[in-house]
Amino acid sequence: MNEIISSIKDDRIVLAHAVNTHKGRQSHHRILLEGETILNWAIESGVEIEFVLTSSKIASAITD
Picture 1 (cartoon, rainbow, N blue to C red):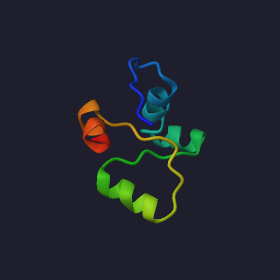
Picture 2 (picture 1 turned 135 degrees about the vertical axis):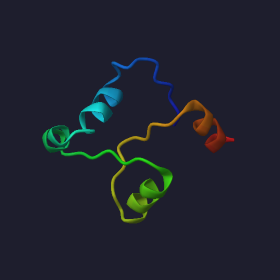
Picture 3 (picture 1 turned 120 degrees about the vertical axis):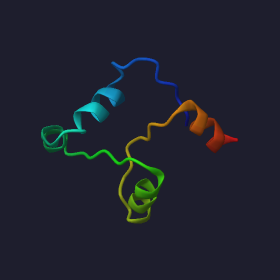
């Protein structure tokens, strides 16, 4: 499901920003994966993906 996020106060944006630090990863028990290759490795390894953030250009290319 594609959903447009229009606010930097969206919970997913706030979480992504928080887990970009060591303290945030520790407190939220989550990590931020960046890039198609690393995301594919995680999926192939069975990592549970909570959500994916991408640009609208990439999102439209995936759904086309």
